[in-house]
Image (cartoon, rainbow, N blue to C red; front, top):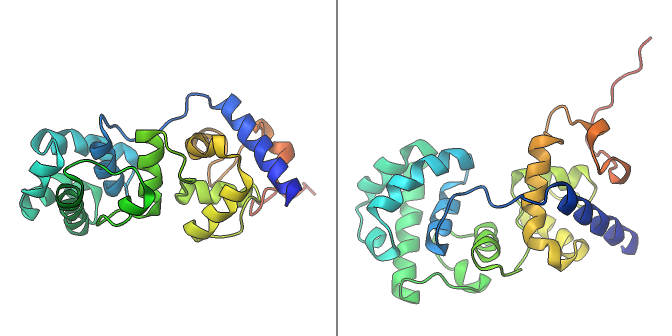
Length: 218
């Protein structure tokens, strides 16, 4: 355990040097906007969400206005993000929860956030970390989970179990930035297919779990 934690700390330190400017790729100007954008990002690219949210926030700039919206109106705006009916239901439920339980303000605890419709642990960690600077946990999305398994930091495909491994291994002062840096690393150096291991600053620390090595020429 101690050796794994030391390796994880070194990985976190190197990522901070290599990707110092990595940050949340969702556009937002307030905690409310980040909650809504993160809900929309499920099964959708952040780029697509960023194309949709300007119109959404122009029409419903705060929880009270969104809570009063009609489902069909919201569905029409967010249709291109996929699963738009379920997402509209979550957005309206979340907005009503913010108004009814928190006076229209986004709460700053994990326990309160996950009680809101559409808000799971990942979304709550995103909001707490990126909107409030609160280190509640490590955000584990599909990309983070994939790279952490490749690095041998977890074996779990389940996000909650993977996060449990990461919070035990990664130093707390890296929790917020760790996921953003891993996502940037995955885009630039370690994609799912064709990882550029020869260019990777983590190559000496990576067991390359699941990476197929080229067969030697005959």
